Length: 293
Image (cartoon, rainbow, N blue to C red; front, top):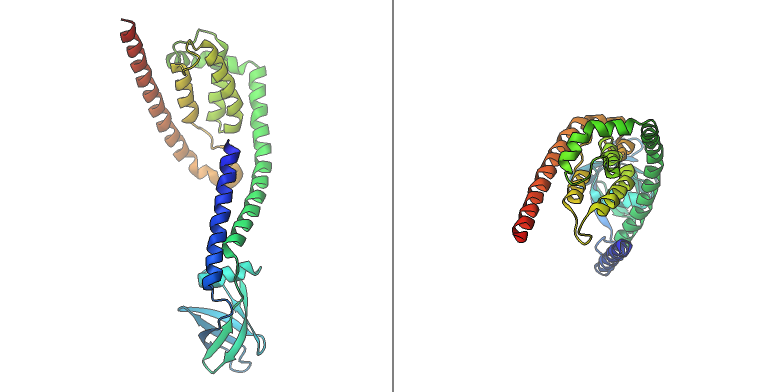
């Protein structure tokens, strides 16, 4: 179902881009084939090839190659349409134009033609995101493998069981209807540990396993139990002492600047989630008690 939604969004994007490009072609929005006149001043009077071109109050350095061609140097402050033309023609820093006519102070230039801009940008974005996805996945492999290995070592060495014993009072308060020493406590503890360490991908299979075990304890199979709701709230808003591995792969060492904000934000979200889940659990218990009486 999700694949169909994404496919539909992509098709809608292509249709809108194509419609906009057709409209631009009909009305010649980009002024293809229309000469434009610009003021200029000469920098070097000896060669008279180095000039300053005035474009929409922007001063651009340019060089007249010959009677038919001019090279315009661009920077970040250059006009947006010039930058787009340069990027679409393969060079972000230089734009080549044809000289139609020239006077002492003005140049009439024919800029490169721009066709199907939206469709080209959409296609380029698709290739860029595909390349980015591959790089991101490769960057995550090493980090996830490291933390999953540490988690396996902790589980084999019995460290997880010791951790469960330490947090047993807290888990029993959060999940009062789970029997003592039930396997669900171990899955929940592993899931919470993975989330705390920023291993969202590793936490997913652990969370699914914990949900399956909670479903076995659920008296009403067609309705989520209070424990399942509490676990979902914790899993969604978990405290994170370490940044997510995705951020580490994207930002590198700069992610350290976000460490304190991440801890504060996730702590607030977790406290809020626990309070809301407890309130609704008590309401549910009160309703069930009232209906029985």
